[in-house]
Length: 257
Image (cartoon, rainbow, N blue to C red; front, side, top):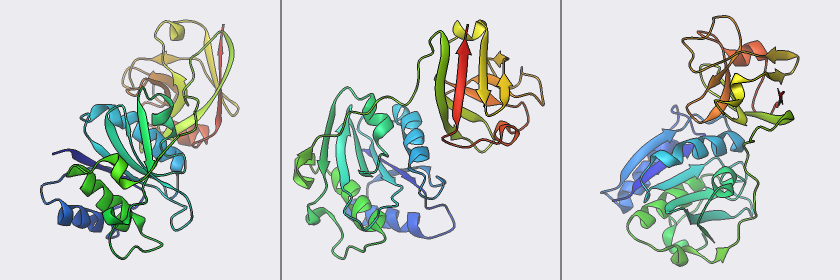
């Protein structure tokens, strides 16, 4: 039985996630559900796109990712249902799949329009319950993509991360975790960070780089080899995000000599 992976901005206080699970189990009592996270910042599509990119590689090939960060709910935006490198994804067509789709080897996307696989009474404010959840449950029972709607082409998207070249490189902050570690769009490279590298965020300059948090000095913002494969900015036992006064989307400049 495929694993259904839930990614939302619903939080844990309200009943929304529980209701989605109830809908899934009512269609497929044998479903296996994993809560990836429900703590995406409200309506923060870019944050959700990064979390999905950083996580999907650790799940089985037949997993079904249900992504509900949907500020356009109730509008004419499409609902995407498709296969990317063997895994299935259900998401609003709002850029949430951009980071995953940009590096896809094989991609087949359909617009979900077949009401047969929705709940009978579809609201205009809770498509997570009425469309995303039932659709994922039907997919987990073997419904084929061509049964949910017509195929359409996803626009070609450039990869969000940047390989580092000599000279000045411009990237951005793509994620900030609960510890205040700042994930940049630069791919880590062991050889490069042994050279003379300067990272600039706002007016702050970072010139020291380490393999882990614990071996870096406290109270100083340093570069870290992050588990996602990206350059992170961190403070040992502190918050780099607060020290740098940064957030998702801010420009990060890296200079390599």
